[in-house]
Amino acid sequence: MRVEKCYFCGSPRYPGKGIIFIRNDCKEFIFCRSKCHKNFKKKKNPRKAKWTKAFRKAVGKELAVDPSFEFERRRNEPVKYDRALWDKTITAMKRVEEIKNKRQAKYIYDRMRKAQKIQDQKDIKEVQRDIALIRSPAAGLKRPAREMELDPEEEEGTGLGLASEKISAPKLTGKILEEVHESDHEMEEL
Image 1: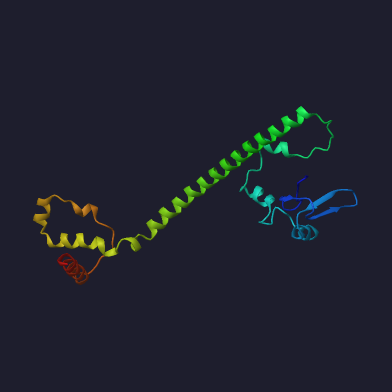
Image 2: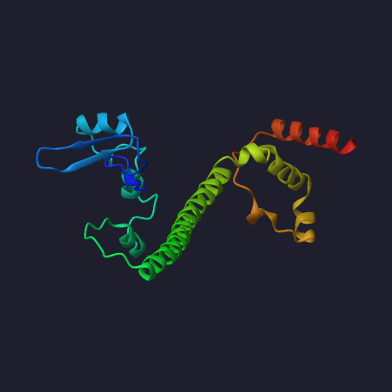
């Protein structure tokens, strides 16, 4: 059974399916379905149609350059039948297919690892940008409220040195600090 590649999309075309268009110069164009034939007649570029294998290879989503693809080339030279050569060819085809599948899987795995690294970086940036959604902005106000209660003498005695480690927050009036401080006490009582 001869399985050919579609000229437009690159998918396999099985016997009895699709269309073969032969131009005046005897060039054959094999199409797997009418969709490919219509796009060819409209002079569409297969590398720009996102559903084709040509697009996937051009963009780098699939392995495009590999020595294992040389075995799939169509050869029009007739070869004299030899049973030993036939057996060797069949075993070689299976081995080539295994190697090709492993290389394609490794290529896709490496491509997905790059995408995962980029996604991790995006996630880190998003968390840093939207930290207020995770942690309350008032969470850092409890510590400055305690600092205001301490006298400067007591502050020196404790040796906390919190003045240099303050969180950069907008300056708040005493009223807001007291309200936050009272709500903190209510939370501690519960």
